[in-house]
Image (cartoon, rainbow, N blue to C red; front, side):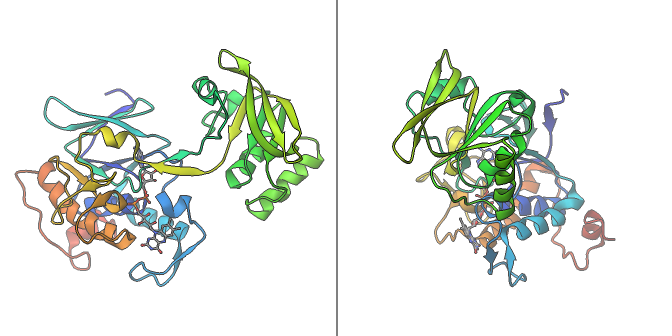
Length: 344
Ligand code: FAD
């Protein structure tokens, strides 16, 4: 099998808290999981939207932050050695000759399995695009980048980074030493990033490695999708043209259902209807758990997703092992489960 092809028991789309706990429940049933997430890290909304905020309604954990919950879930699933692919979007789905699901990601990876679990939350996080006329042509040539996958492509280039949050400042700090020039553009003198990151950026500015402009990107100049300059509109109303090979706008993320809408599932206002016994969709062998699903009485809470993951795993087992019966067991007393958990 090619390096970017794999076959497993269950594919999980989405490494948010619910997808991560699904790995645990599937693992207890002896099922192996592969996960894909478009983000570059696990934790979904908890890690992306509120890593430092306290959560008070996780059973048994009176208080923990979004990042702590993610870290604890990762620790809990470690014994099951899931295969996690980050920075990849689940892009297309079809069936193999033997009736398994074949998921393709936007990087060309192909994973096949008898069961697909969609734990995609509110959908994929997609970068907010600045309202610049004609920006699409430069996105296609990767002269406008919303994420940096290959730092080496930006060596010795004139770069314009836009935004005032952690991503904008982190990339400013990482790229300034290797760029030919780097200008950070932000519409306010204050930043939303961590104070130590702001200090680092200011140090680089005083060393002449970063130039700061108070304004917003307003236009792009170039030809055939090759960027030559970013036009910025300063807050005092003046404009300036900055020589640029690439513009990196970091204006936050929005959530869109994205390619899952084309997987052939019944949808109800961008949510996936499921039954409440197995959390299976209208298509056999495809389950939906967590914020992405809908059923009467659904509460978009992490604990609801955890419950859904447990019942989903029981039903998934029957697809992977149609000839076997899954025995109900407690982790406290089952030596078989303790062996799987590597605590025995
Ligand atoms: P998500 O956390 O949304 O994760 C889904 C993952 O799927 C994402 O990482 C996404 O990148 C990925 N994905 C989507 N589409 C694709 C695709 N096509 N390919 C690859 N990956 C894809 N809940 C509580 O219970 N208690 C709280 O106190 C609480 N506080 C909250 C505070 C805030 C500010 C917010 C925004 C939410 C809060 N919630 C809280 C809600 C909670 O975060 C969600 O219920 C929970 O994150 C849902 O988990 P999930 O795994 O279903 O989805």
